[in-house]
Length: 403
Image 1 (cartoon, rainbow, N blue to C red):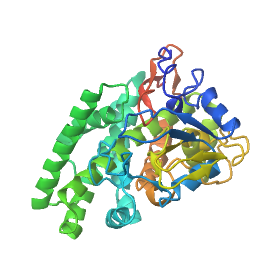
Image 2: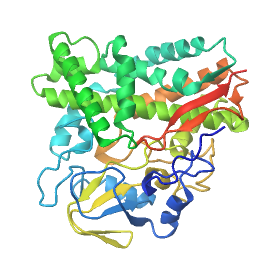
Image 3: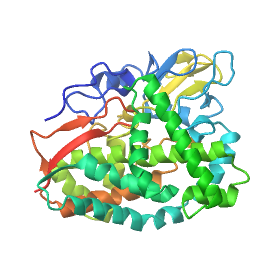
Image 4: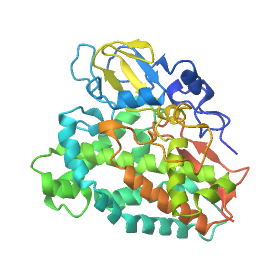
C-alpha cells in the first residue's frame, strides 16, 4: 500500500506522477510538449537572482550543461558578487565552481577516482551486498530500503573515503537530511554545520594518518595544494553523491523490477543484458529532479525564450531522459534498448565522478538480490513511501515479500 500522495503541492520541477511515482508528473511532461521551457519559482531558496527557468528538452539541457562559459555554476547576487551556496557540501565544492577553479580541483580529485580505484572496490561492494542479503535471508519480508538500498552504498562510500565504520550511521542520517527540502531551514542549516564539522575532524585526522581511502590519498599526493575547506567539500560531495543518490537508484530499481517479473528476467538474463538494462534503469528512473542551478552569464535564448543575464536555469533531468525526440517510445522501459547516452549523471565538465561506482553497485546488487530471492515480490498491503521532498528522489520504505 503506497503512502498517501505527499507531493500534490510539490514544486513543479520535483513533481512525480501520483499514479506512478517513479515517473515524471504529467504536468511536468506537459512543459516539454508545450515548448520545452517554463518560468518557475526556485524549489530551494538561494541567494538572489533574476527569473528562474525550467528547461526540459534533451538537446537544450545538454547545451546548457555543456557550456559553463554561458551558464555558470557559481551562484551570484544581483550585483554580481559571490552569493554563498545552496550546497550542503561547503565552500570549494566542485558543483559550485566554474573554470579555472573547477578545472584545477576536478583534475586533482578525478585522478584519485580512477577506474583502477573503482575496480578495487568490487570486493567491498560484493561483501557489503552479501552481508546485507545474509541479514535478511531467514525472513519472509523486509524493508529493502533499510536493509539493502541504504546500507550497501553506505559501506562502500565509507570504504572509498576512509570513514570509520562506527561513523556510518550518522553520516547516512546527515546525508538524507541534507537533501530533504521539506525540513525547516534551521534544521538543514544545523545539519550542514554538523556535516562540515565532522568532515573537518576527519580531514584533520587524515592529515596525521592518511590511511588508504580516497581522502587520505588526496592528502598524501596533494595535501599541500588542497586546503582543508576543499578537502571537506570534496568529502561531503562524494558522500552525498556516493550514498544518497545511489541508495535512491537501488531502491527505485528494486521496486520497479519487483513489479515487472518479465522485464526483470530480460535485465538479468546475462552480462550484456544487465549492462543494457542498468543503462535503461538509469534513463528511466532518474534520481535527480534537476541539475545544479546555472546562472546565465549573458543574455541568450533557449527554446525560443529570451533568458536575461542573471536568470537561473534548471535542467529537468527526468524529462530530458524521456524526450521523444531522443528516444523512441521514451516513456516505456525497454531493457534491450540500443545504447543511447542519457543525462542521469549529467553532462559536460560537471559529469558525475561517481558514475562508474554507481554502475558497479547496480551490476552487483540487482542480480545478487534476485538470485537470493527469486520469488520476491510486492505485497499489495506493503508500506511504500517515497522521498518526494528530497533533491535526490528515492524511497523511505519498501516492504517486500521475500518468498
